[in-house]
Image (tube, rainbow, N blue to C red; front, side, top):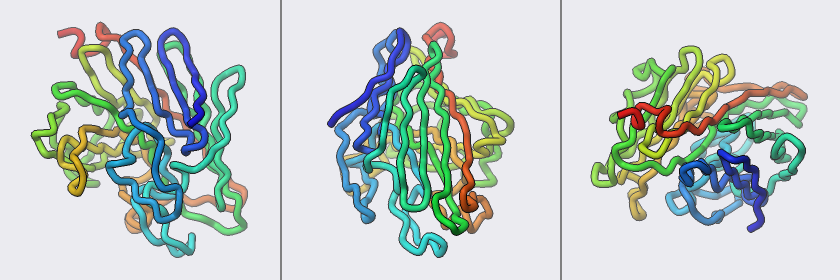
Length: 282
């Protein structure tokens, strides 16, 4: 499968246009570490697709839902992990980065990736293409390749009791723990979440006025139950503290696109060397 690469002396990013513009590699070139779960771009691109452990890798975008659900305004069952993953996008390189774009049946979705030193700036946009008002939610689905003992950083995120339990651990556990947990916190002002390891760190940063919630997914040997258990986690900027659009609507956290309306937001991903992390200072 073809791919496009964006790189400087600190970060390398590789994108697969034909498979949902999935980011397959997010590499800190100083350490050589790929922060993403590696694997082939494969899976069912149809409406009945199931996002199971056999396809859970890389970095996808989830919209207009995450988990599958029916929706009265969409008039159909919404696909597991949304309409975007696994389907062809247009990806073009220009002077500033990679412009990724998908034409959906009711909306367009865009993601521009720009490198600025040790930072990858992700500028997003969604726009309605129908003449009816449509509900939606979004979650960045960046599956991190972590190692037992690394520290989970959740600065600027709290109020876990409002949307589920507090994360069960502040450290990455091994698969022998059997942990599988998804929970949500509220972003207080600006989130700075990520992983501190001995070979460097990664941070995802965004403002509460653009993305008010952070999902925390930990699969340390407890998921999937019908396949070989995986070791992965995700720290997910999201519009709603909900697994799917139906739950978001039930809690009053759904977003709405009016005809012709567009919404924009930004996530910044930073690679830190060991000397700038708490783990590296020990």
